[in-house]
Image (cartoon, rainbow, N blue to C red; front, side, top):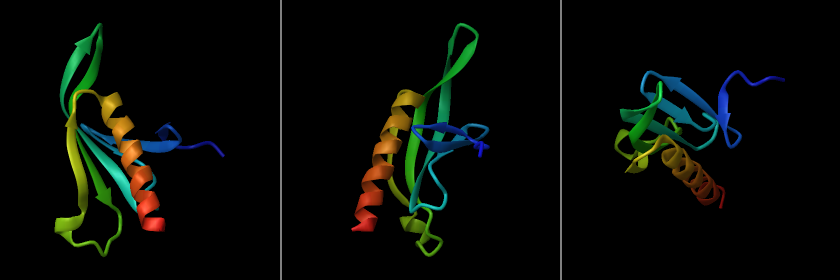
Length: 96
């Protein structure tokens, strides 16, 4: 079956304007990346200054506890790389 989403390291990427959700919504955590600024490379806009948040997908989570971790990174690649690490670490914590 063909996936309907782009993916990075076997996790789906869903973009709406300057916000990218990374991860499986049926898992405990996903990453939300907000691209705050862009730089140009030739004729391509590349996201830099990316605000990264690890968020809980549990609907029972209190609003003030939905964001588990956050940071700002200087490139989209760096933010996605950190997001993947966070998702895997927190997945292991929940399954223990």
